[in-house]
Image (cartoon, rainbow, N blue to C red; front, top):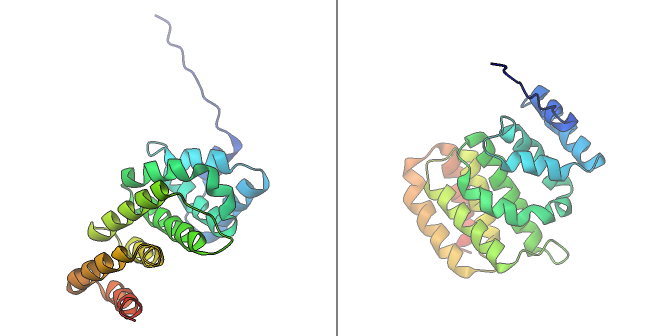
Amino acid sequence: MQIRYIYQMKTELEQKLTESTAHRKSRVSISNYCIRKEKVDELTSIAFSTTNENHVKAFWSLELVCEKKLKLFVPFIDSFCSVLPQLEDDSAIRPATKICFFLAKSNHRKNGISLNSEQEHHIIEALIDRLIQEEKVAAKVYAMKALFVLSKKYPWIADELKLILVQDFPNHSTAYQSASRNLLKKLNK
C-alpha cells in the first residue's frame, strides 16, 4: 500500500504569522505587511477560521490593521459579526472586542463607517454577552466602551449597561471596578 502525503505550501502571510510573537513589533510588522501588500482579506480569513493554528495571531494583527485603516475592514464586517459569538480563546476575544470598539466609534462619527442595523444588532449582542460572561478584564473594558458609544444611538443600551456594571462591580478586579466607575459617571450625566 502506497501512502501519499499532500504537502500544502504555506503562503507568505501564513509563514509570517507562524514565526510571529505577541510582541508589539511583530504584530505591527504583520499588520503593515497586510496593508502594504493588500493581504487584509487573507488575514481576516485566517483570523475568522477558529480552527486555524494562527487564528489568534491573525486577530492580533487584524486589530492593528483596523486601528490604522478601518475602511479596509468594511468588506469583512458581516463575516466578523458571524464569527464574534464563536470566539472562545481569550487572546482572540480581546482584539475582537477592540475591533468592535473601533467600529462603534467610527459608526458614531459623521464621516466614519456606517454599520447597518443588522451589524449593529450582532455587535451589541456579542458585546453584552462578553460583558456578562467570564472574560478577562481587557475584553470586558472594550465591550463596555463600545456599548457606551452605541448607547448614544440606542438609549436602552445605557440602562442595560448600568445594570450590568452595578451588579458585577463587587465581583471583579480593581481594574474592572475602575473602568466601571468611570463609565458609570459618564452614563449618569
